[in-house]
Image (cartoon, rainbow, N blue to C red; front, side, top):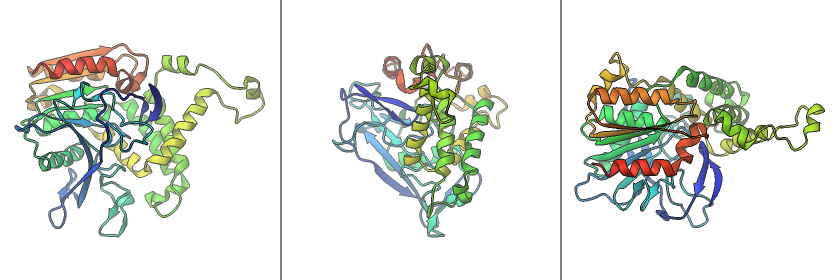
Length: 388
């Protein structure tokens, strides 16, 4: 096995249980006069959704599992697009024959979120009314809007019921919203390193990242698609964000205070510790693959999400749930979505008499644990899915 940097963390590459070669597909709806109405009242259309499927839908159309991705991932969750691909999808270790989401039993679906830049309609898509990318003309979107787009995709695939909606980080927020918006369709939810609301620290960190992008002269008010992208601002925003995925102990173990030439630190301002070089690398790689406007829109959608909105409290909001079961997992070193946020969801779920398995996993990897602690998660998820 080897590792590479992808999305929010290194992904372990393994061929065992692979789904093999896969293809990203596209579904378009809300064309013509029948536009998609957003939560804020604005209309959008047509809407295209990039998605991938693994496994087969059964005759009862009730073995589907929706995988919800985090902030900067894509629909490519498992397998490879070609034999030459250096690495598989972002959650390949969890999806495939015999894995946590067993494609011999389940029809697994992963779609790129609304507002993204990996094939689903977002700020970098062409606005049909203007003949150029939306930029900041793209409407504000919410987690609920993302889920409603996925519901349209689900209907187009002929899915009658969903066995589970599962996701880590922001993906967990989408899973919660699926169960709240469509309680009669979702049998269970799997929430990993997530929360029902964005905490103030996360909002503050996002604010600095958004400001870094907007203060880049090349951002040009979001209209940069025919010129230079705001690479410096986006790279800085990514470096800031990436720090939140890690943990104090992991940073000591991985980097410490190592430097290739400690004496040069006393002579040159541009002499870096290893951790600084790592962050520079992450920022540079991110600029190559992600759209700055999408990053802003998605972070804002995370900031404003509140699963208790309009209900006075989480337990009251969760009274809408009709799940058979729930699974919640957190990680001791995660300070982006600390364990207390997972426990809040567990308490609210159980208060509504829904069986809820909770695992607080001791891990040194910080928020990235939801991608790296796949062996522990696999054991828990397989047991959970096999119990009903």
